Length: 139
Image 1 (spheres, helix red, strand yellow):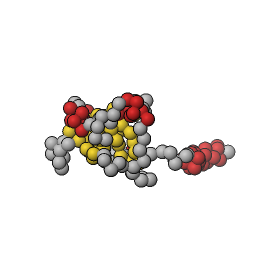
Image 2 (cartoon, rainbow, N blue to C red):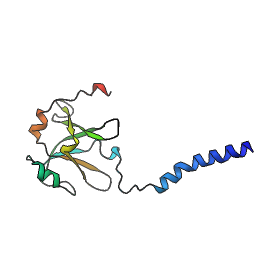
Image 3 (cartoon, rainbow, N blue to C red):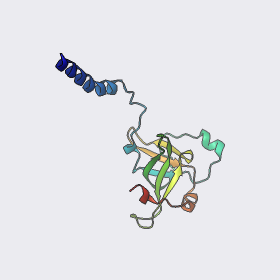
Image 4 (cartoon, rainbow, N blue to C red):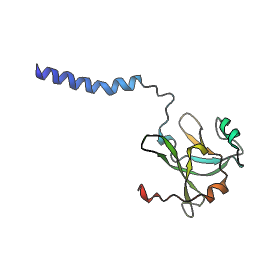
């Protein structure tokens, strides 16, 4: 009887993840691997709080300026997104700079069903003036 109970427990534990996966609504979920390494764009001009608060996009705009790459997504210990680390400037990793762009200054924009870019309301000049992030603490 003890062996049967152990077998039932093992079967239930094995079925648990499969059941969770089958009931998970993945349509509105995005994996970080679909974001990191993607491009970062500016809108070629500052945007006030009201305009930025109501702004949305479906795809990359023709007048956007590609200014860097998404290096990392930063979360706090509660799982809340704090911002992204952006690699800006430079050429072939020479003279580039890593800055932390706060979540309130970015928007995630779909390019297609599997890739995304980040748009920031900060100008390229504002990003260049930001303090560099020392990535040594998480390496």
